[in-house]
Image (tube, rainbow over all chains, first blue to last red; front, side):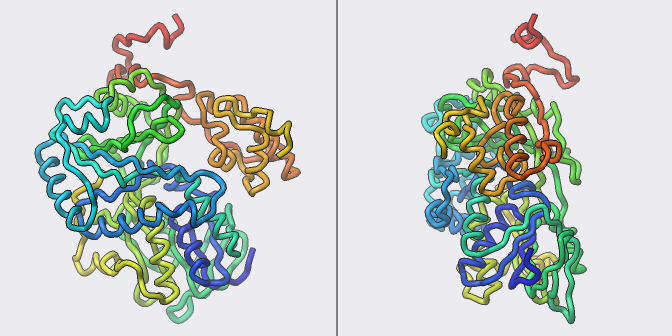
Amino acid sequence: MKTSADAVVIGGGVTGSSIAYNLMKHGMKHVVLCEKDTFASGSTGRCGAGVREQWGSEGNIRICKASIDIFEKLQEELKYDYDMEFVQKGYLMMAYTEKEWEQFKENVEVQHRLGVNAVICTPGEAKQIVPALNTEGMYGATYNSRDGHANPFHTTRAYLKAFERLGGQVNCFTEVTGIEESSGRITKVKTDKGDISTPVAVNAAGPWAAPVAAMVGLELPLYTERHQILVTEPVGHLFDPMLMSFSLGIYCQQTPHGSLVMGIGDPNEPKGYDTGHSWQFLKRMSDIMCRLVPALEGVRVVRQWSGLYTITPDAHPILGTVPGIDGYYQAVGFSGHGFMLAPIVGQVISEMILGKELSIDISDLDLGRFERGDLRVEPSVV
Amino acid sequence: MAKEEHDIIVCRCEDVTLGEIRKAIREGATTLDEVKRITRAGMGPCQGRTCRLLVAGEIARYLGKPVSEILQSRYRPPVKPVKMGDLSVISEEGENSGCKCREEVTGQ
């Protein structure tokens, strides 16, 4: 392992991998990534890996749109020899309460203003997009064909392989144990495999972001929460878009492989690091999804697991620098939608580290906003 | 990829060949989880009952380590595939309330 570097990225999920790759791409010479387990072993490899422009706040729409611009060319840019399985077959966002329906219609107005071509659908029109859908009780839906999903393992690995080709070093099974500073500047990242002298440390540690931040004496307003998910056996084509409903708390997609991946939020989930699983989740998930898509009754669940959301007070990430700790950067607290943001976050954080002009303004996503009381508001989060 | 590697299926559920497993290992995978994430070996309906030892053996041979030192992946429920229609008729108390496929589930 290198004993000195221009930058050390902490975390081998999709965010850390994207930052590390972008640093090398933009001209840094010696970048080291440290991951305590293996690639995509934290939240990334456990997530639904959806990518959407259909948000309610201008900030989220802009940043996700910029991320999808990158996703569309990523397979080619990273020259990856496996399929990242990025498909754009849309998101169908379904409203089951009047309040949700009104919100969706407002969201679409904002989306149109920012160049997102989402459409408002009656239940009948939604059924034309997804004939397998039972639209009983649905007020309406919105649909955006540019949304989609990807394979989270391969997207992460594609970034890491490209990073290595550019000369970056990936150290898996290497846990960061401390970060040293001197006169307010980062000097060293310590690991269980040895120390790395560096002027730059990037915290992309996902659910472990708060413990990593504590290494530089920083307290982050984050908590972690389990979200459960399952995958079925592969079956013939059932539907194209990601199905999502906030009032039901569900999302469900059919992967290119034919299996269906789906999850459901639990309002009673306690905070913490539990990544266990429950049969109650299987029951709730099956109840709702068999009602929405009756053809699922005969489809078998093969595997269930869970992952952690790392949640901030306003469900938006915390990005960038922290006053008083030169050389410390963070991309943390993605609150359940880190995967879709990773391409643009990697780009903009690397631009920030290298002192380049930023391709998108992220100044309102800094840590200071919580002290200023300037919280972001997003009406559309599962 | 040698021809025989291409012909030998290691993961029968996902049709993953020995050649594909070896490629992932050559490219740096040192655990069952990594091979699984790259190739899908062990992700199918049998959850790796057949292939996990074979894959572990390949990793062990490549790394020159005993199989016992190769990091295993976790077994995940429901162990045996279960239809969503059957899961949805379980009552909140955990009892099966008149499942139409009960005979099939219990084999009676």
